[in-house]
View 1 (cartoon, rainbow, N blue to C red):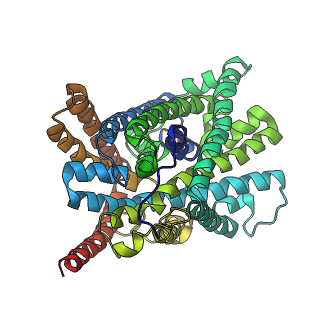
View 2 (tube, rainbow, N blue to C red):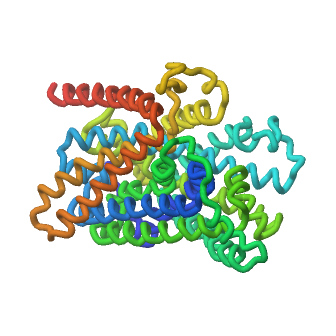
View 3 (cartoon, rainbow, N blue to C red):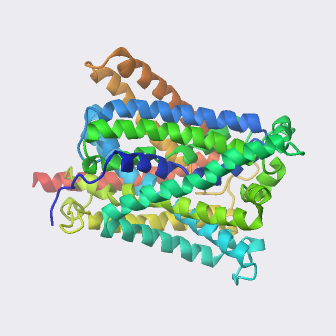
Length: 480
């Protein structure tokens, strides 16, 4: 076993890593959610996409400056260590390894399974599902759950056996996933403007009549965009494997971020040209694909969506698989001598990857039981009060993402104090804007999710206490 990762990825792969991890899953998954939260108010939804995108690009610019100065094992953890110290970096790395990466990865595995089943049942309406597709079998059926675990395992195998193959999968799926997005963006806008129904004009003219159930439609919608825009920071996890990382990583982050924002807003507008907001709220973007491209081509695009989601899943697994290794490389976390090993033939930290597979499976089980199955939701506490809620039920596709923004804030503050060799723009202006954007995301989460934040914080504290236990255990062993 070797204990050093080789530099094997170029700039194009890094750009595809940034764009590929982000684009293609959240935009399909959360576009419907944002319409529901705004009750069909298209301008308000676009405003949410713009705000979320601006926050992302500002944070990207802030970290791009850090990427040109700091380079070690795992980007964001490196930046935390350089600005906040080893203790803060450890807890950020522990959070990313046990909550942030795996919670998003598990949701992506479910999305891949879901859209694949939508494609299959649309091609073969009589395809036998234990729960018929019309009754939600593509979403909550046992076949969907089995495929979710299968795709998790497949992403692990690809990354564990050949990191270079994982990079090729990322570049190819990034190109593939842009096909349905760009088609819908261009054709949907043209159809929505030029067709006799002028659907796009009609949808923009239809403002929300009733108030959103969340009480804060814009904040709740911005919070939903967090999942759609998130993932770019995971690309920094390959900086130890990126050729000329100090030059290529900042370029990849900025170019990839711009591609993401333009693609998302164009797609969101294009979808509104293919179906009424009511249909989009109830059925999702698939109805727009079918209306514009017909049943056959529209369904083929569903297959592209499934491939797109798997590409995002693969990119997320890149970060997951290296999580425990990034801690072990610093001599921290549980069993650093075990998780710090790198296989000689594949140049991959296999033990770290195996841990990632199991923690992803745990979060997949949590997401399915709390967000998809009705059994958990039948229990409520604090009944009859403003705090009435389902215990330990929260959206694991959003709340961990908001936490990472809270982790960013001290990093940006310390960067402003320590980066004495940087110009005013890079030292003060961009980090200050990033702090404001990150704080806004945290506020949007508190306002949009309400009591769910309370249950999430309890789970978060438990995980962090476990991390604290292993940190103290490792420190004692090193002193002995």
